[in-house]
Image: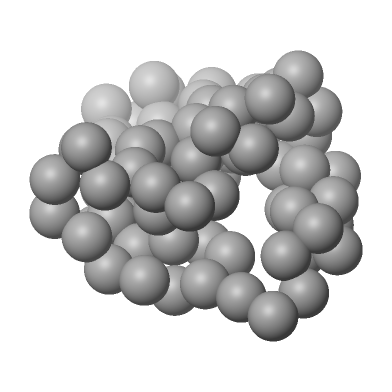
Length: 82
């Protein structure tokens, strides 16, 4: 797993009260990743999940029905100075 660092502002945090992990809608490439990880008995940070600090977490959760690419684009437009 990736350590907790906000994908929008790059703030690092340790406590889940300071942010959290958001799982977005899976893309076809994510489904392939899941299949390979299962076949190879591997573990890792899912490519459809990202960490967000407390400032960006709630906004990211509201977009979880989108793919990660779509959501991050919207969030970066919403928070251009982060």
